[in-house]
Image (cartoon, rainbow, N blue to C red; front, top):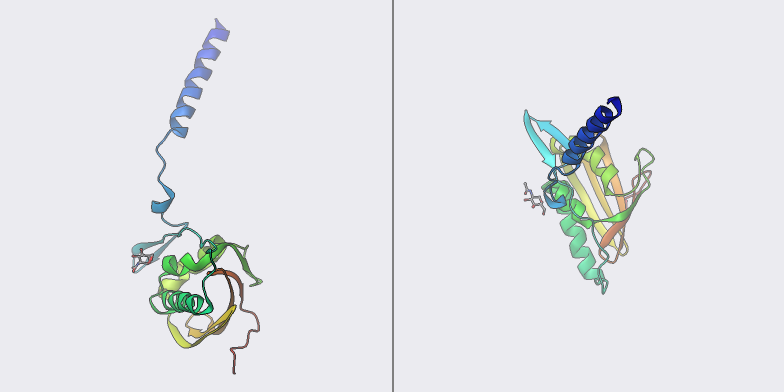
Length: 168
Ligand SMILES: *[C@@H]1O[C@H](CO)[C@@H](O)[C@H](O)[C@H]1NC(C)=O
């Protein structure tokens, strides 16, 4: 008798677990953020875009520069991280020593909560294939020079330690 009851109990548990795993899941395109910030008590989510996929054929230098201009505008002017990160490859390698890892995810985790409140003054942007530079002052960390390496239309690498803005 006892055995029968244990089996019935287990069957009930398994049934419940199946119901949990069968719960509807949202498609990735509408998954809000890994990062939710409160800005003036308004919750704001950073939606993680699909990563940039290497373009074939690879865009010309001029086309890549135009993509860099769009990235710079989204990152520094409109501060739309979702749009900016459309240019970041899944293989993005971040040489910032404080980054918790490579790829767009760790970078968004760091930037998501602080970017909306950060005041940014653009000091310059430069493209010299395959590198590009952003020079700006931000209210959180002062003057910054970011250097990015582009490959097949995507940002694949980033440095921001001891970088010198070209011509300075
Ligand atoms: C930010 O960029 C994304 C992707 O380009 C766009 O869908 C979204 O509407 C933009 N958000 C704002 C507030 O402009």
